[in-house]
Image 1 (tube, helix red, strand yellow):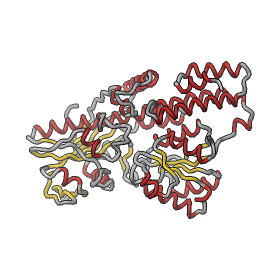
Image 2 (spheres, chains in turn blue, cyan):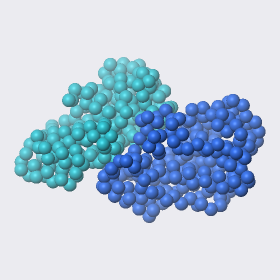
Image 3 (cartoon, rainbow over the protein chains, first blue to last red):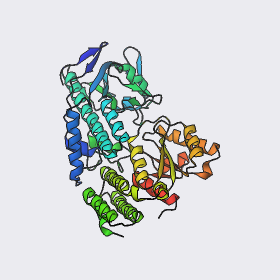
Image 4 (cartoon, each protein chain N blue to C red):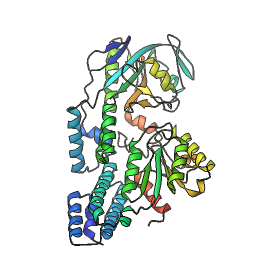
Length: 240
Length: 210
């Protein structure tokens, strides 16, 4: 990932190379390391990964922006420019933040269109596996974008926290409209449905705190906090 | 019962399973018996899925094998046998939610298990469900939703079915990533399915199969 460009004065990252490995993809199918995966399934995943490489199915792009924190109380954070982010999760999670970075990542509509195509052609196994590859791609992209933002922050003497996402407890999904106004969502082709879901569906919006010393949490801690931790098919960690 | 076909399907051995079906058809065997064995194999797949021996891709793979077998057997069935279904199910992702991969898996597994699935797609308004229940005479409704925002839509959809005077005519199942017994009670559904096979098991129970 190289330097970002600025679209309508907000930075955009286009040069994102997603090197997906089969392990990440298998996890997104609910298949952990301990599971014996059928060779037919592995072959099909490998075939789909090759198709992706030889096509424009994945078009990863991210938009982001930094905002200086002016003040915060228990239920919201006020940013410079009179912008407000609501929800108790953020002030509780980033009390030490000097800035917030709002980021929006998407792999574009191509993969989803192909999934629909497979479904319509009555090839559900390919559809399911490709959908899982798309989820794995977004996961990978989020990690890469956070690393990029960490490097940028580090060059200014700051650290970046782990991110939070709308829909988490204490950060209502209704804030999605707010978030998309804080980054250049039009430029990267992400829109919201009337109920606040992102289209393309394989997109992630997130906010992280920026400051001299920021907390980070592991995937195991994230999984442990989730109410689906007992039943989740997709958890990253064995104990998650 | 031919053990071989049952075990080949249960073991997801596509090539062998198809070969056995062709051989049995060529030998003039009753196609309904072949289909019965194939369904028994599929049941074992369901049991292995429930015990975490198999996973979603395996389940879908078994469905694809079943589809291929049905295609082979279909020309040998009478018109009546070919169109005979276990029951009609109106199915869709509720208003406000656009997730479809889970819904598609359940719909596919219901289909290969002999149900007629009327798939209304995603972001389906309450009235659309009501209209389709009236039109089709379906006895089962499946409401899918991945996010918490779907819970209210599910509740409203069931209320609309009730308001239309259809609630006593249909059984309603709900499903999706975060669905629990608590959510079932909140929405007023009859049952919830944790996964695709749970949905199939519910549908079979409600239609008196097994």
